Length: 234
Image (cartoon, rainbow, N blue to C red; front, side, top):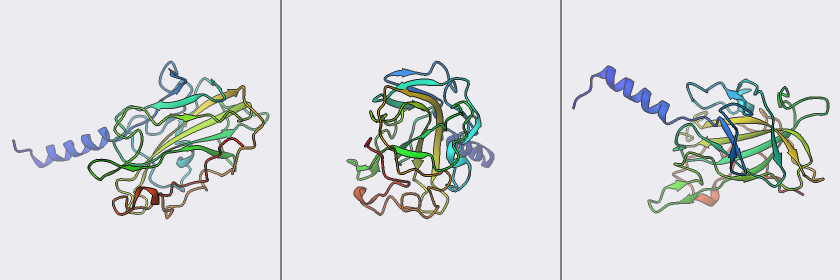
């Protein structure tokens, strides 16, 4: 079968859209939020599904088009992940961050500005039987599991997930960030001091080795995820 140039363009566009994804539902201890964008803030790519390519832009924080109506209760120690709208078929790490809502503000309105974000999870790659570098959660419909550290202080937070697609990351500003932020209240936590605290944007540069990288030319243990080290709950 021969396709016309116009049909080939349409097929290319359709394939590209299908390869992109959003994370509209948070899952806590196996229970998903009741509907899309209920506690997770709707992102600007809710329809087009394109990722953020400039890691220094304001969109790198939450990519938010509007805040959510609800706040999810998340006990410290909970296992969390997100449901994806499409298969997560691009190679790259999944990372999770938390930002504590300042006193006097609300998770429904806090914009996440300032040095308030700390990382609680990142995933590292392996080489599969085809000698391709792959990451946990790749080619599935849910993101990698993470755990809210037991010692996280109680309070309202923004929870941020990102999956960084690295299939074109050998070119500057061609890594694609698929991300979302959810409004949560952590309960039953401890007296830990989360950190280091970073700002988003601010924590990433386009030239970071975990963002500008040829994943076909490095070993799995040579990959350096962008951003601060993971806070383990101390």
